Image 1 (spheres, rainbow, N blue to C red):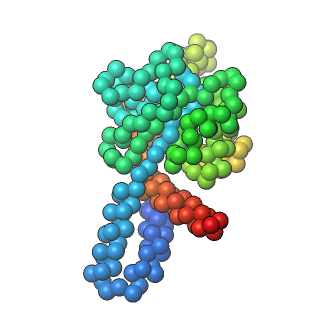
Image 2 (image 1 turned 90 degrees about the vertical axis):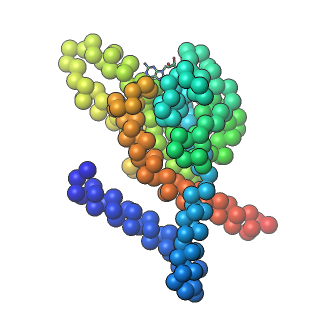
Image 3 (image 1 turned 90 degrees about the horizontal axis):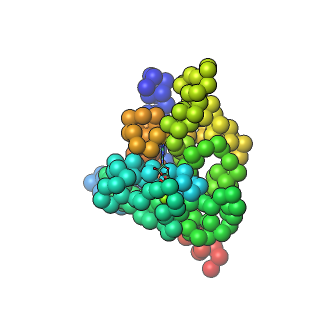
Length: 253
Ligand SMILES: Nc1nc2c(ncn2[C@@H]2O[C@H](COP(=O)(O)OP(=O)(O)O)[C@@H](O)[C@H]2O)c(=O)[nH]1
Ligand SMILES: [Mg+2]
């Protein structure tokens, strides 16, 4: 990490801490030091208990179940893994626990049927609104269905990571060309996804290139590290979302 990145990272963390403290300011301003420390400890404990539901979505066969297994550090045939295969194997959302954090649940969602993807029906079928954060998996070019999924997530004011899977297959196909260049191929794939997401107004799209079975290869470990680093942020958004829902319900009552 460059020193500029390092500084930006520290600045972000500082912003997060300040925003947390602002939340608690009113509460602790009237307390003595030991009580204030207790309030902060309680707050951090509560944040730890917040449940985060991650929905893994995308087309049928794009590698969602394979991703869920790789993310949890499991092979495709190990006990407790998600079923994968050449035919549709996931007909209902299936939940799996994050390997490190028991309050983080990873949901392997059924695939969006192609080519007649009807967004409304799919979203209703998988109860899209019940997830707090999403991972969209695409195994090919950026398509209309990815636009629809990303747009729905943005409408709910939630966040997602975009994963381009089966990178090994894309590379194999490109290798046949005379001027094949690995870095160039990976750049083209990444830009295709980023451009698709920018077109719908996402300024800073987060795209990971993944080869389902190999952790060290491409971006799987980068995704896992980023997810761990951003967990507190994601959880804070869940709390804020719940609070704003409660406020809306209160105003509508
Ligand atoms: N070559 C390759 N095949 C993959 C990769 N990820 C998944 N697959 C295969 O693609 C097929 C569909 O994967 P699956 O995870 O069941 O897709 P899902 O329907 O989205 O859950 C299976 O045969 C997987 O073994 C990958 O990164 N590379
Ligand atoms: Mg599946």
